[in-house]
Image 1 (cartoon, rainbow, N blue to C red):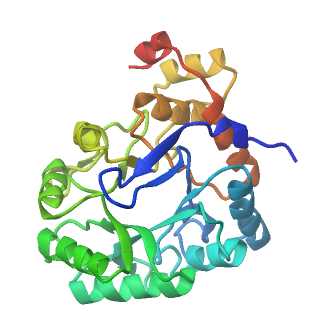
Image 2 (image 1 turned 135 degrees about the vertical axis):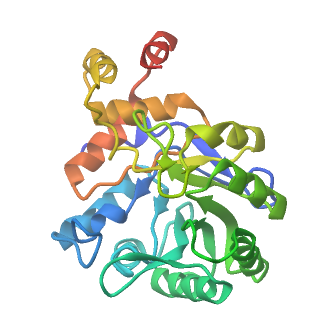
Length: 299
């Protein structure tokens, strides 16, 4: 089998300012696309391939896997446990809470303290773990539950030993600053990619992207974990990224990942895919070396 593990040569530390820092390779895998498409619901179309993707990712050096119990309603968690349990000692499984799926397949808030506890207990059970290494609280705007109440519940669950590190997802700059006042924030997971530097939520008038919080992450040694990084990697006017991709003989998607890896050492991309071929292509992006001139050209 062709191996790419040697390309995953750079690492990042989660919880650098805590007594229990965790170091992982700086290209992870996001599992959302393993569920039934297009609604992220139910079993994958090709279940054997989904299991093989998880196994291959770990074999090739990926030791950070992102999941959530609301992906297909426990589908990705169960796939992870089936494919990888008992887990390698260096594997960090990160999950998210704060949302759930209704019977009509809609995404709804699930962020009251009692609901967060239910989610954590469910993740522990389906992932077959006694403690989850990293849990992101996913903000659902205008949910009716104060941000500090939900985040406070996360830190209480951490004190009970159910969570090792607490992270935030889909946050504004103000929410991240508020979170830092409440406790140690280990990571932030926001939408971010070459063509999606900032995310403006028209419905609520707030920016929830990566660019607007990257400076805070750098200052506090908080890894920024971009989601949907490949989903937004093909803008209509992609001339610059296409030129640099052609120069390095890689795809635009691979160049998007390379750009993220070079944008800041505090960025941990987690590209997701339901294709074994695309998984291997994504891993190859870690070997792309961009010059200062390349990065200046890309902007």
